[in-house]
Image 1 (tube, rainbow, N blue to C red):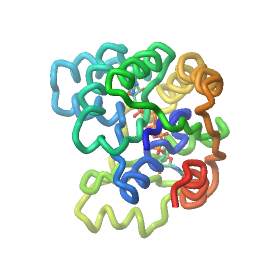
Image 2: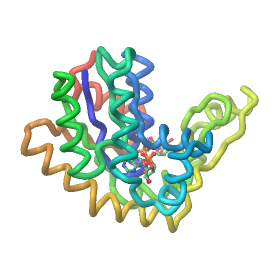
Image 3: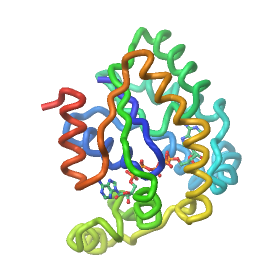
Length: 215
Ligand code: AP5
């Protein structure tokens, strides 16, 4: 199963992709996570990407493609993968087509996570990541038990540098201008399925699984 998760920042792409990975073993390939790791490791690529990410703009296609190529060809992605945050513009979508055809592979589905814009700001300002477990949590929406589990594991709740109101506004603008055109791109190719992505995480997950035909 080769899936692209499409949706605005905060629509729940990462949350849902992590669940599919856990339950079905298809690896989540998140360009955002790969870039944040490069920034944390202070690699030359990470140093180039940091400023752009902090401003909520898109990192260059060349950097992102370089990361994706190796990751898709890795052994654990043989059975399939979930692309989270890639492609992000039509040029990346075209490059993905070329890459997949070189590997004699095809996309099965593109899932659009549909969430009203007002909900996104609250989700993003409230997002926290557990430093120990890596769980993506939310101070407004996660249960006290979920938040406590991080502390009990000896972790701290960290906030992403780009999850401040100004940068979020720019990320949403960039999404509208550069990524949303992919909705039409994949609709024309008959690959797009849209799921309502508001409501409980479990309810969204059920909708996602049925859209993908997963039991
Ligand atoms: P990236 O990391 O991809 O960020 P994003 O697209 O802005 O998406 P997010 O991770 O913010 O949101 P999400 O949809 O995954 O939501 P999540 O599940 O976390 O990219 C970051 C930056 O890297 C970009 O700005 C760019 O600079 C660069 N970059 C990355 N890819 C690139 C590319 N291909 N090309 C160029 N540059 C690239 O959920 C959000 C919050 O909501 C969480 O707190 C979660 O707990 C909560 N939540 C989720 N679902 C629900 C629910 N149903 N109910 C209540 N709360 C929920």
